[in-house]
Each structure stands twice: as C-alpha cells, then as structure tokens.
Length: 114
Length: 114
Image (cartoon, rainbow over all chains, first blue to last red; front, side, top):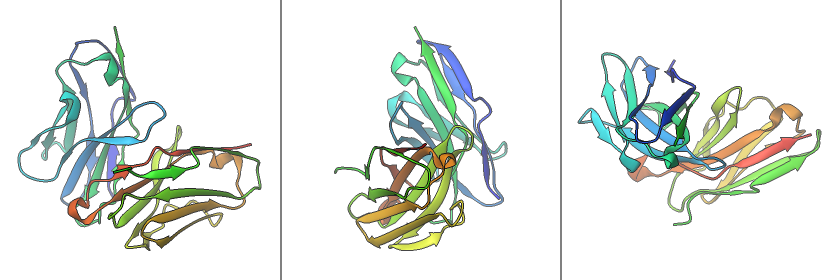
C-alpha cells in the first residue's frame, strides 16, 4: 500500500532564509507526486507536480521540488521565504493507474518569522 | 471559472441530527472526491466518483455516512445521525480528463457536532 511521510510536522524559519520541507513515499509501482499548500481557513492549492520527465519541478510562488526515485523522496525547497509563505504544506502521491486517487501526508506547518 | 463550490461553509449541529454537505465541481470535470481533515488523522479520502459513479468508498467511516452524485454538477455527503467525532473540515475536489491527476479543491465545510 502507498504511504507518504512528511518528516517534520512544524518548520519555523526566518524571513529570507532558505527552507526544505521533506517528503518520502512508499509505493511498489510508478507514481505521480504533488505538493499542495493550505493557507489558514482555505482549501488546498496545487503548488507543483511531478508526472514524468525532468526530476526537478518548478511550481508557483518560487517553490521547486526534486524527485529522487532511489531515495523515494520528493522534497520541497525555496531559496528565500516570505512571511506570506506561512501555511501548511502537504505532499501527496498517486499511482499512475489509480484514476487520480491521492494519498496525502500529514502536512508540515511552515511558520515564517520576521 | 468559479472553481469548486461547497456549501455551507460552516455547519453547527447537535448530535443525532442529519447533516448534508453539498459540492458543485468545476464544469467539465468528471471526477469528484470527498475528503475529511482532522488534526488527529490529517486528510482522508472518503469516496470518489468518476462520471457520477462511485468508484471507491472504502474510506467512508461507517454506515452513517453516504454520498451521492445525481448528475455531473452536484454531489452530496450526508451524515445521519451525526456524532461529535464527525467534527472536521470536509473538502470536495474535482479533476478533469485533460489532467486527471490534478485535483482542484473547494474551500471546505467546517462541521461542528455538539
């Protein structure tokens, strides 16, 4: 069965510092990978996704993620964060034959301090 | 495009009452997903439909929960009778054939059962 592990439940950082949010998955088949962001009292918004091709994926708001098949990881990075990046970030995985059925991690709360 | 629409945004009810949550997917999308989000369990897929047909309802917690999709533009999630442990945020999401792996989320319904 698939599963997604987000290793950090909370990540506090200062404004303009770099950040990495970690995500590991387990699956016996080929997968698609996603990062979603949830701002307070809102629904989830897609940040970026890996379907195929280049393992480095660029998304909205300056975020990027790298798919590492050997380490079954899909870590999210941003070189310089802003206060407005404060939100909860969810990693998700989908089997390529699953009609889009997503399995989500528990989420990482990013808190950016001035 | 209006995005995924959910109603109501907030619902407060008493234990034992029937609760109905509503969702209008993005026009043209043919897959619809219902999720529940709690602090303890994170985001859980309850059920998903493809072309109005329920495909996987293994995430529905028990017989008190039921979901319908009478047409391509409307779905309901019903809880009868409701219990305090059903308190959560319920999200609806939809995806289309052009990009089956990308789900677009509604703003959610925050349910409180007293």
